[in-house]
Length: 523
Image (cartoon, rainbow, N blue to C red; front, side, top):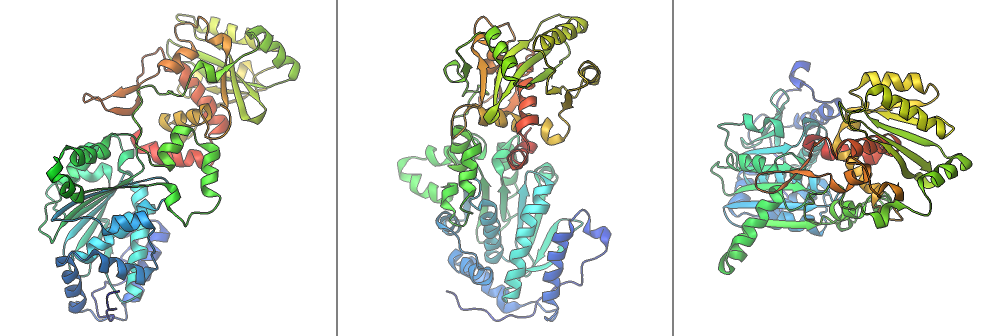
């Protein structure tokens, strides 16, 4: 280990300025910054020349190992094998790194450690930390950065000089700066030059290639080396992952080894983190679909699917052994409850009848999706079918945009629970699709969503089984996939109705929160 440097004087500002300067920073993060300030008061307001020169020496030698040892000694950070590979990799004057990791692997924390390493090796240079949303910047990345700065300060290795809350900018010992920005503010950095950039959760934004290339154009500050880092769970061979794949594979045999040292790609699964709670991964296994498991836990780069519900097939998802009439008789005899999923649409309504069986199993057993039917006739037909079931729906999930239909449902079924997509999290389409997919093809056990076998035979033009088979993602001009659904008024309303009902009944709790955080900025 490098010899421990004696704590020296440094330039630290007075206590945080007025409440106005703090802006929207949350109280916890502000208190964290205050502790750094308090630790600094024992020093005189003189630059620690020996410490800054030591950092510059490490930078000129590109001595990542010594920087990592300082961080480990000061903070107790013990990287696992894949994090260590990330920290020690990279050669040349320009380095690009991608840490492709499953959830819970510590990729964001490892990314912040990489940022601190860059700050140690390049004193006086400017860095940029970018996240998809402002909340992620403020509540995830910034607290990690401040915590490491505080621990380094307490151990005698000062980095942070002051933090400008109004500008979301850290001023560092030695004259460097670190800017914290959300993706939406990246285009405002015209004219700025940086020596290093960290793009967290890169694959979850709407157009990661554009953001990456915009950031790359800003990394041009004169420095011992320049670095771009992306950390994310994969979303198929697209985005920044596709950029790295092309750079690493396009080189000829003579150049490939050198190129791969400059374009570092490290893949880590959730199993690579030995510090996770014992019940964490088994908990994911109980709620994830097989595809979600491969992507979110195993960090596999899956081929993008044009079909939204590629897991759906008649052999796996049909409820057999009876007819529609026979199923309804069984439903009445057993007293099984059912829900109505009601996507009114403007001219293309779709209503699903969904039975709620034990073990959280849903069976879609009837539907109504007429073209050109008046609302009065539609209402009359829905009422007639519910009367034939000899009980009112347990829950009716309505399209939030049609307040008139919500009012009708309240009046027609006063004993039913009438609901809609209330929160922003529930309204987002991509997380709701993942809820449906996780139940169509769970990692453990049989499918939890089934469709009456009779719905597959001669379905109407907009029938739910046709919707499940034919709903597609939008494609970009270059052929890559987006997370946006093709709204063709044929295959989208039935799946919207199913998604709304599944989210309201099964989408609460930690799973929905995680999916929402991952998809909210890409919707």
